[in-house]
Amino acid sequence: MKARSFVSLAVPLMFAFASSGGWSASAGLGPGVGVVPQGPQSDAAYARSFKLNGVTNTFATTQQTSCYTPEVPYAANAGPNDGYTGESACNGAVSTGENVGPYPQQAGSNPGFATGPADLVKNHSESDIRVDPTNANHLIGSVKWFASAEGYNHVLGFYESFDGGRSWPIQGHIPGYEGWTDNTDPVGAFDGFGNFYELILPYQFFYNSDGSHNFQTNPNKEPNPTVPAEAISIAVRPNGSTTASQWISVHTNAQGVTGPDFVAPYPVKGQEPDKQWITIDTNPTSPFYNTIYAMWVVFDGVVPSKPFVSTAHANADGTHTDWSTPQILPTVNNTASDTYLLPHVAPDGTVYTSVTNFPGKHGFCCITISADRSIDGGKNWTFLSTAVSNIVVPSFVGGYANTTFTDGIDNTFAVGLTKVTGNYPLYIAYNDDSAGVSNILITASFDGGQTWTTPIQANDNASAADEFQPNLAAAANGTVSVNFYDRRLACPAAGTAEAAGAGLALDQVNPNFTGSLPPYGASNYCVNTSIQFYSGTLAPIGHNVRLSQHSWDPQLNSPRRFCVCSANATFIGDYFGNTIGGGVDYTTSVSTFDDGTNPAHYQQQVVATIAVP
Image 1 (spheres, rainbow, N blue to C red):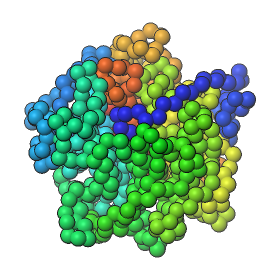
Image 2 (image 1 turned 120 degrees about the horizontal axis):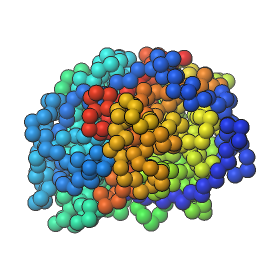
Image 3 (image 1 turned 45 degrees about the vertical axis):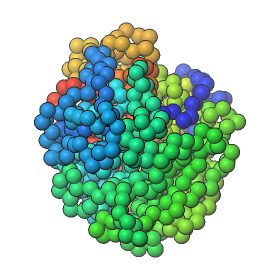
Image 4 (image 1 turned 60 degrees about the vertical axis):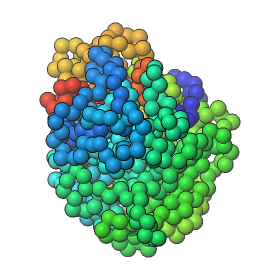
């Protein structure tokens, strides 16, 4: 998500927790809240599940040191509380082999911008991960690559593995769009040839004197008037690349003109793209094999936000055909805001996406999630049905209890790869905050999106805690997984090795916590990552499994989303990655724990693996 807030969610809090120690469906709760088919799990059993299920953890982004030259330097330092250290000059520490700048796109920058020096990349939050369909051991993760947590100053970076996630030797920022202040919202997809496409949202802002963000397009004030204010754009990493800089960020169109690979440029403020997502049809038997589907939403501040789609065809050499003219997708309610497009392709070539709608009459408190599809390679789209309605979601502004990080994306979508009752199943999981804490609910359609099952709750914690940011993935054998962040385990106790590794002693000031600090033993505070497996019919396979070996503190080095002057809107990402390949489920998610490679307790990406049942 960009640094701006487009939708403010005012969410009422309603507590309804059963005295028996489990969740109880009752009046005021969203459909399915408290309905946990696998039953509750004790915290002790959950803590043991990491080892019992053979989960592995690899701190991926600590394996290399990356640097780049920001378009807009920013010197503020919010430390020493929470471990903040401001920007730090690279001083030759880079080990990735990437170009640390300045860059060609920065040549037109106004005075004071793109001045260097190159800065260290310290924090890595909001992530995506994909498995190469031509080689199950080849993975690419992408993530926000922060030079300044205080300034929310980042580009997109990547980390690449050739051994099934055991090591990540190639890393760096994704080149080609350094002329903008931020590149945001990491998401990628492999084509059928093993080329990797990253869909990027570059945008400009500069800093006011108080540290807040200024989005003026005045050519004398904006950082770089020679590039569009914002764009939906592409960078391609060709199959066989071996260095950090091997990316294609230009496109030669049918008229022979070469320029930046823009899917859709937005040169003037007032048309604000956001929430982009991408999928590619990689099934060789599909009639639309190697069709690329790019989706995004445009906000303009006057009429409701609108969802768009554009397509192209991938070529074997990492190039592609021209992008089609963007078209608006059909939605459930054309008088309110639509967002969160998450396209996926079924094995028969049908492409589906969920669409999330904020009905204006509900004061933006609740969401409705529906689905669209195309059966002709993206030329025409049909609205299918509403899956869930009027779901109370966590406040985008207020964040979660006890801590300062906020959330943005409330749901996830997947298409099953094995038919159920003659159709490829569709799955939607989402946050539900109607109990006063966030829970993960999941529903499915087994008739092509015409009807949906009654939701069930995925998280099986026995006591109330926030569970949030679900991400679905589907396996070839029909198994479905949903992973999510999990706050059921108390923070480590004072004097323990786990508390030292979690860096809790750095957490000294927190405006949203009424308990004593550091938060030793605090409830609903520290974070883990969890996963729940289901059969294709949504029968749970076992209980939630802990994917993170160590609990971590979300307050440490958490980027300040809107201004260094406010500690009440920090960031651990709006989503994180989940993918399946070769019988293994891969998750990439945040941790500030020091496993011996992260002594400054920066936000790092930890890749977890678990066998798919």
